[in-house]
Image 1 (cartoon, rainbow over the protein chains, first blue to last red):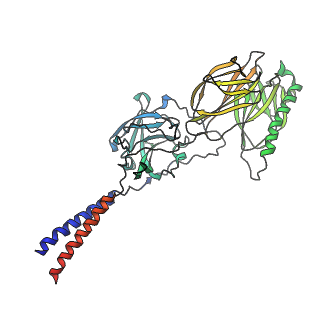
Image 2 (image 1 turned 90 degrees about the vertical axis):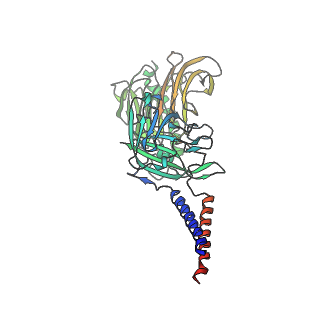
Image 3 (image 1 turned 45 degrees about the vertical axis):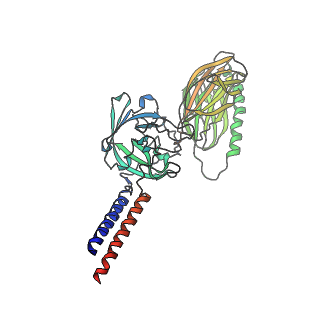
Length: 207
Length: 274
């Protein structure tokens, strides 16, 4: 009788401990990767002025597709929030925002930056909810103005930074090798301030 | 033509360049080597193409009025600058300045223009190349015309008031297109414009009012200085908390309960072994 009464307790205990361990393992964020090293940081002391990137509606990408995430999102051209000076990520979480002051669809140099919500309290999961799951070699397709042309990129790096330490100058550089930079939030969430601690940044280069 | 009076021109140029020499005296003297100065040359004297000589070397041949050339990368030092009619010998310079001090590590515009009373002069302006906040553009307006004091208006509102020859007005604005015009100071009498200025983000747009009001040759010349952009302050892109995959408190409870049950089960088994 004692074995019969003790066994369910032991089994239940083991099940719960194993479940906890599984959750603990899954909750660890995937390690960062970068292959090859991201494009070199811009030198701010160049003696020749950086050529002016022509930023116009002509260069605005209109759609972003990432098959690995089953993502097909409308791209809005956005600037900065005049109140905060922050990137003006589109309020609608199923849209993503292209930084209109930086390199555009046809860029031959610099970082094309697209940011999107990981989620929102009101609207649920955002377009970039799964951004942190991308693997090296995953394909990202950008559709140009008018929907005619496409540019194909391959993921080469995924990095997570505390928002206070992210090298934004590098990711918003308008010179250096042309690359696509995708940014969202991640890491621990502070329920009090309703902010994530980190930014997740994925770098992709022309395939 | 006024410009063909070399002696007066030389005098005017020399006087104006004292300003640059003074600037250099205040800012010179760090022991380490300084980067080259970036010198842009602006031609704001109507009707007279010129050859520009720097230290006796023809640097900008056939430089046309209304044009902007450069930037030339010049090591800090003193320079002899001369403007001649195209093809003329340097000895017959229209405008000549000797020993102009060029401070290192600066972005300078050297402007050939008319003074308020219509004499040709070479005036250096040091350009503000401080980084701009994301989303902003810098507008610099310089009075380099034979004309009285003016107000510069953008979108109908005065942004710079009472600007006189050789002076500038400067402001950092939201990037975008503004319609600008120039009126006589304190009046509604338009002397220039309106002109649409495309103020590009991260760029300083320098607008020169040049020419002569009397001769009705007033015009605008525009120079752009790019690369002054900054990144946005941050990328806030989530306030739901669903993506926080960290283990929440309930799960720690579940683990602890599991461990307790497990130990309890073991404890109940123990008496049987005795």
